[in-house]
Image (cartoon, rainbow, N blue to C red; front, side, top):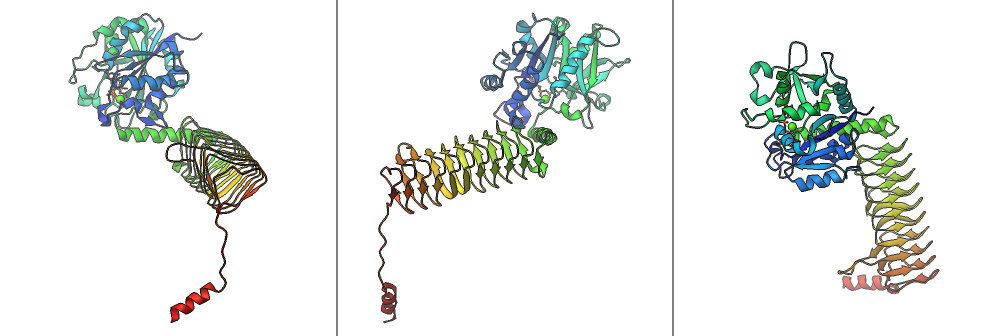
Length: 471
Ligand code: UD1
Ligand code: CA
């Protein structure tokens, strides 16, 4: 039986220690905003209608980020206008949530390393009850070498939790305790709402601490359990940018490990950056210092060259990206070669077996199957047919200072080196453009176009010129 559980994610705070104008949960780690990580984890546990995010600082932006998560559109929001502490966030949520039966899981939006399986285990444990009787709640704890900044878990004689003390309110003895509160809880909803109003802001910070709930339930004769997490890294919460970088590194490491175990070769993995949402097929090789970002999907047997950046793009099987190549929002079909030193800027479609060589820029361009632009070209807003050859230095003049215009090149055409195609323009299938031509009029299929000054040869001109100098 699935346990009925409501999930509340606290994400209202500014995050003063980030020293930022941006809300803490909008900062990114592993290629996603912190709030996206929390929401994805929650969605694995509960349906969207039973998930609520407490928003406050930059509420509108946080709402947008939540709604953009796949499956996140049904998630509810609770506005906490003034942030008077984690306990206060739940007080604000009371009206909307107190009617929902079952269990109440609470997580903080600043802990993106939490795994869904861990949260699931927590809920199961809460529902199963503890050996002493039915538990009122279960919290996750971690043994930390340095728990500075975290709340400490104070256990009673039989091992259940007596209370949690915050860093600022702890005695020296309590500060010596290494078991830290992760900020992830699962409570019996009825007991939680019954006792919530007993939280008082009687601490040095003057805040309503959610962590006081444990002591309150304990005093009322209920049991609260602490489940120690296996991997203490999962416990890291982000309060400043040093922790942000640390968590980002762990998320990247997790992603690379997952890909390597699934059959992707990553050379010098510690130098490679791959976002959480990226998918890569078997036997693909990723060379050192590559960055694969956003929603990129890469097929099997590809190679991503050293120092390349691939963002929000789709690469079919057998694609080779040479070193120092940048690919953005583009689709590359099977067997395409691009780079080294190429830039496929945006919205390109490169069809099977086409080749894009060094110092070639593509923008909103379709390259037909087996078409080639091997060196030094700019191809923008262009429809290029199959088997077209674009010579070195050829460019589309797609911009007249006011508007962008299209270039069309038919199948099998040959565009000579250094030609200038002034758009809007159409080159027919099988036509030849002579090297160095400036083409301003349409070229019919199979024609040769020469748009350049005729060559003039003056016999012995240089000899006479030198003779003049000697006089
Ligand atoms: C909190 C816990 C601490 C625990 C640590 C784990 C409390 C009192 N302390 O401390 O025991 O070890 O997390 O990382 O809960 N928030 C709101 N509204 C508020 C205040 C905070 O929504 O009024 C949100 C924040 O946006 C943040 C989360 O709650 O996402 C946690 O707040 P934070 O201030 O970072 O708590 P910590 O001091 O880290
Ligand atoms: Ca925190």
